[in-house]
Image (cartoon, rainbow over all chains, first blue to last red):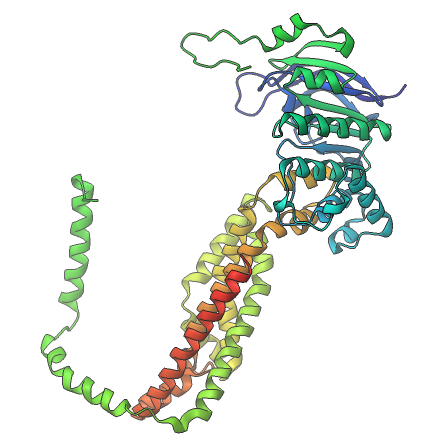
Length: 260
Length: 252
């Protein structure tokens, strides 16, 4: 089976930060797997996902995405970017544009730069956007402006935009933390289901162990920028989860602590 | 808030000194102001009733002023699109946006009437120098507004489009433009209103429009005709203001 993500000895610190955001991270995710990245806020989940999306630079180690090495100093080639889809916590939609326009935005990386700029999607582009809308159950919202939608509907639009990219790897950063529990389950079912139906790999960050357990085949625990555990979902034990969320003892005189 | 400490004292002193210096060095003869009353009354008397026979000149002059404002604004918009992008902190390198911003500040610092006089010298009398002057002068402000509109939008959708593989210009078109469009519309309407007000006087230096008639009638002591032109100008400014308020609501 081929490998979707291969990380060897990855370390990264944000500019000006004393503590590294990621420290000696190594992991391997085979194609087609749905994996949850579990950990408290500030554990390094967002950093790891942004880095895998090719938006962070100056890291050390080796990272390969879909068989191609990532350059620690430069963004990936434009032609490769659509292969990795990203779903954001805060949706990151263009509020004043329509749902269909936002989903078509996912096609921009697949079009020639001139066609993208002229805003003339081909029949093929439109067909893919319509299919993505249908898969996310929002075909009837196509002509609505995003600023008139609810949170759950917005995240469906964001997932449809991601699917319109025809990604082989889907990264999602806390995709449901802005939604109520019922919506959260629906959205994660949609995300992981759509990935599986397309044979795509899914890696989503979550700080809720129960959601991770329900929708991932494998769970990677991350804390303080290091991998705490990496197990199939069936083997996840309560002690390891509890340890992941254990509050860091406040250090006298520093006044900083991790919050679970 | 009351001035406090030495800094506050120094500020008050400076303002007082500026006022005293202006009085001391300007020939302000209060006696002249006293005797001016009857003369002002005389002017007003001669302005009344306004002479309606200049309707044709008023129509011709205001139409020309309106055309100068419209074409000048169009020119400013066309110039402000590239200059706005080049003055944006988020689109280009600091070296580029800093130098463009400095250039725009210089352009803003040159009064419209001065630009118009130079343009009359360069291209001759008529509305053309007025249009060029308005376009040039307004770009100093409008390009700065456009740059601020570009920099003021939410960054998240831009990151999302970058992640999907969209280049900088495509991101400008589909992530930045839809967010900034209402701001651009508002700023452009505002600048058009200013352009119209400022181009009313362009005729005085021969750069076209209704200002020519104000100048002609006042200089030749035909105050009743000047009064008609003044009324026409007021009506025009109020009408444009009303239209702009309606337009702004439309783009909210």
